Length: 193
Image 1 (cartoon, rainbow, N blue to C red):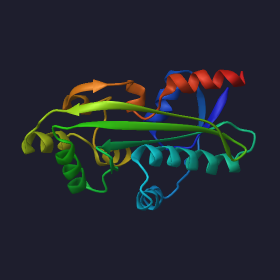
Image 2: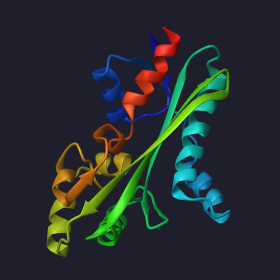
Image 3: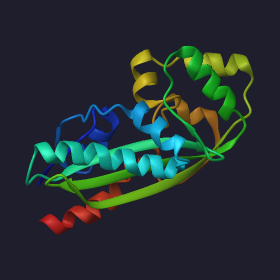
């Protein structure tokens, strides 16, 4: 079975491949910042924002690819109800890490499967991460090890690489933290075999 992944995330594509789910990559290219700002202005929680973005992405591509199964996904950081987005530059990344420093926060990953332009299934999972208390030099050293491309694509920490060293405690599914709760996706996709 082959699905359409409405994301340009290399990590999500790799997770699907490792789980024997073939996919065609077709990024939705929605303006995430515009959607987030609109939802924040109405008082939406980070969880609701994540769910909405996953659904928007999958529905947009699904309407262009009728009869195909389209998977949209989105991940956000929730720091005590505040949405933390991907950094726009290195200064922004440094400020985000300083804000998360020594805190417990949630990483929320939502997925949505659409067909013929409408959602037919969705799932949201959250993991709790506790970041170590680091000094400024340690944060800067960590950031110096991350390439720009990865930083802007995946956010301030890549749990599958250097990012693991930032945390004293990680509670939750690793695939969820990397952006795709694949166990639940596989379970749902059994309906189409």
